[in-house]
Length: 285
Image (tube, rainbow, N blue to C red; front, top):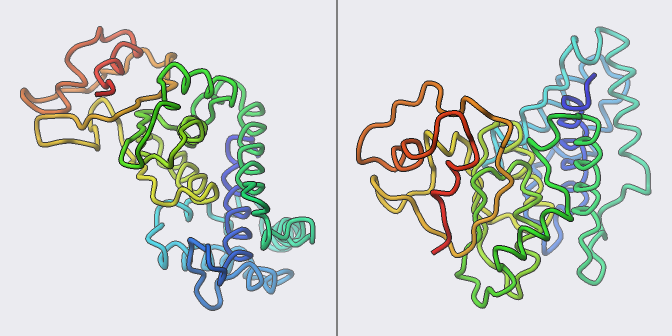
């Protein structure tokens, strides 16, 4: 299986293990309904309905926390990816066994404020991005680049939690998180991502970094910007950071924005053969 595909399964299982280990604790941000914990997933090992059972557990967590369509997009009951019959049983059982190791007990992962699990999640995304080759920029921005972008945007000057940071092409949210970390106060985070699976990664990433209130929208920010002040005006933010998809050439293909709409503000100005100028229409206030 290609790295760009199996990352969804590994990171989803990591998320389920994390929220299960943290369930019931005062700082738990996700509700794990009865019968839908990682222990319940472990009970499926060796059973013929293991794939279906894993999908059901993830779906129940998603439904309980308004995360449907976010964390339940990787289906384990998939014969094309995991094989049929005994092969699927063996593969998924081995996968659950890996996450059952004591070294992966996240019940006490926050020690003196250290976000160990969040950092591990970032580490995995970075390595999946490397394996994915040319597509890596689609969902991950290296930490070094993120810090430079945050410094240029001046996020460290934030003085109030009411101040906002926004990324119109947020990918997995790594750039947004690194930018927010440079602020001296816990600023409010907004982002938009076109790819629905990558948007799911961003939502999980925010939760694992204790930023569950971050608002991450899904959709094409050029044709359908989500954050609007009104029907005709784009919402403004205190700080804007972005690592836009510079390789996208025909970004305006199929766009027919109407006059006097927020979408027309985004899509009418730049040349149709270059992607980067189109994101200059979103600027910090």
